[in-house]
Image 1 (cartoon, rainbow, N blue to C red):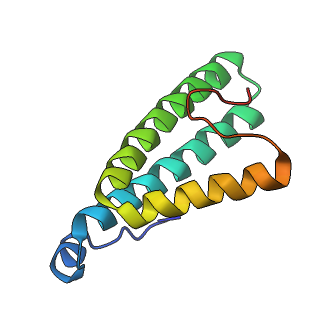
Image 2: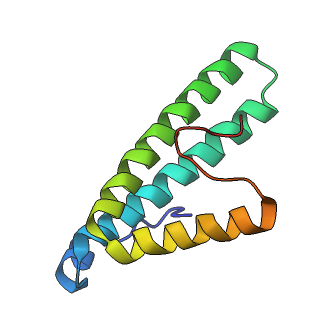
Length: 105
């Protein structure tokens, strides 16, 4: 996502109405990029040790993403409401109820 150009965090802090929420969203995006990269590498490498390490690190990045998402939900009531609406829509479509404590692993 970010490629060679990282966002100008200092400029965001000056221009954003609520910079903290923007910082958290950028952090979530960075974690998702890292997860995708590590899982892709794990899927492509022929070295079993590298695959194991990449999947372990990807799992850690998922925890980081969850931490940032939790902070964002604490700061942004609208985000929380929309997340809940989305979960209800998925339940209506699939018949499966979302619970962050019970995943479909």
